[in-house]
Structure formats: C-alpha cells, structure tokens
Length: 277
Ligand SMILES: Cc1cc2nc3c(=O)[nH]c(=O)nc-3n(C[C@H](O)[C@H](O)[C@H](O)COP(=O)(O)O)c2cc1C
Image (cartoon, rainbow, N blue to C red; front, side):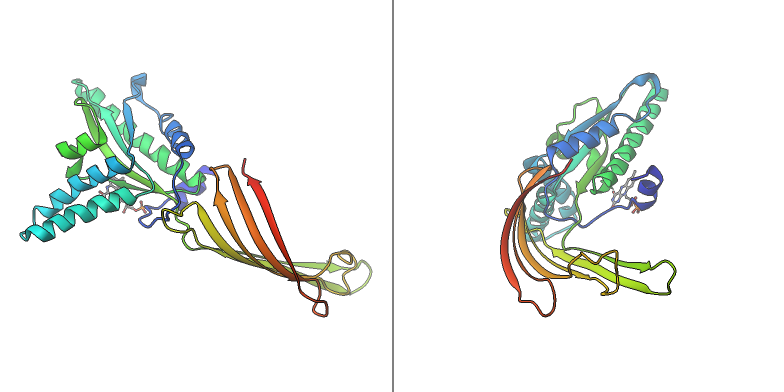
C-alpha cells in the first residue's frame, strides 16, 4: 500500500470483528511508531499494550466517570460493568504515554513527537488491514485508568488507541471477461470467469474459526482458440478455516463441481495448510 493511499483511506474505525490482533502485528506497528521523528532523539514515547484484564480495569475507570452522573446505584453499576466489558472485548488497545520533563520547550516537542508516533501506528495498521481509533479525554489523567495501564508517575497519557480488524461479515468477489480477436478476422470471443465468497469469523471463544462459502464459474467461449484447452467450471465450495497463527492456517472444504452443463456433478473433500509471507 502506498503512503498516500494509506493517508487517504485511513478512518477512525469504531466497529470491529472478533479476530484477535496478534503479538507480531502489535510489535510491527509499535516498531513503526518508534520510527517517528523526535527532536534531540529523546524517544519520549512509552507504549503500554493492555491485555484483557487491564482493558477491563481501564474501562471500569471510564465507566465509573460516566456513572457519576447516574443517580440510581444499580444503573450506575451497570454502566461501570458495561463499559469495562466493552473494553475487555476489544481485540487490542494501546496506551500511548510521553515522558514529561521540566523543560517546557522539550515537553512540547516530545508531546508532538508522540502524536507523530501515533500517526505512524495508524498508517502502518492500514498496511496490515487493521482499523484503529484514537481515544482521549479526562480519563487519561484518572488515577484508576493510569494504574490500569501501569504508566509511571513521570509519564502523561497522550491517547488510548484501539486496534482491530473489521471483517465481519466478509464478502469478496472478482470477475474477468477475457476477449480475444482472431488476427485477420472479425471473430471476437468473450470468456467469462468469476467467483464470489462470503465468510464469517465466529465470535469468541471460537474466533480462530472462519466458515466460508465460495462459488466459482468459468465459461469459455466455444470459438476461443486461445482458451480451447481450458475447461468450463461451476463449483460450490463449503469450507472452514482455522488460523493457527498470523502466518499459517488450515482449511478444509467440500467441493461440488461440474465441468460442463451436460456432465454430472462430482463431490470432493480437500484439506490444505496455507502460509502467508
Ligand atoms: C488527538 C485526537 C484525539 C481524539 N480523541 C477522540 C476521542 O476521545 N473519542 C473519539 O471518538 N474520537 C477521537 N478522535 C478521533 C477523531 O474524532 C477523528 O479522527 C475525527 O472524527 C476524524 O475522523 P477520521 O479519523 O475517520 O478521519 C481523536 C483524534 C485525535 C487526533
């Protein structure tokens, strides 16, 4: 992905799928964040990756602030619990902090550099197909939230940053219409191929599983001499994918297919291990 594309396409993403964000992805994004320009090379940023329990505590602190305006004790408790649970359910959350110094000029520069690190993080996330959303507010100086994120006394929280993949449900399709014209004649052929796939990542605790259905179709023009050896195809594929890690998954799928309208349908069962590099 080109930088300009990432800048143009980045949006604050507020809905997320259940797909976990992996440690490798977070590390890659934080490496990009730490490459941000910073005056005097102070590397002023601190990154706190919150696990589910820390997210719950941070959310509870935020919920407690919102609950202050609610008079009914039961409703206030529900508010605290709901916000805490919403935070625990996030696929990923990073607290970006900056080390504070007494030098006012440097403090400004360091704060600005940390925001640039956050932007690096957000744009790099685009490359990995991940959505992000910056959150700020009075919560950042709340002692309970600071304790949940484990920031040090001399650090100021700059932003809470959520990161996740938005893929539920996923629908992808491609279509190709290949035209050939025989040299010296006016005969032009048109051969069509397409596929449509719908997939749905299951909610936690089964989020490593992703069932899918795909239909593929190839229809070669009977006058197409270039594709004369390519068989037609209609195939329905029902499968499920299991993500072993970011780079490896297992797919097992049933295929029902026929090579031409006048030929019988045949059934098959296939399993594969797929790698991403
Ligand atoms: C410094 C900063 C703080 C932000 N704080 C919040 C926030 O507290 N809550 C929120 O919903 N969005 C927050 N945002 C996201 C902005 O609302 C969002 O970037 C803006 O609406 C533009 O939308 P876009 O990011 O999709 O372009 C923040 C963004 C920045 C840069």
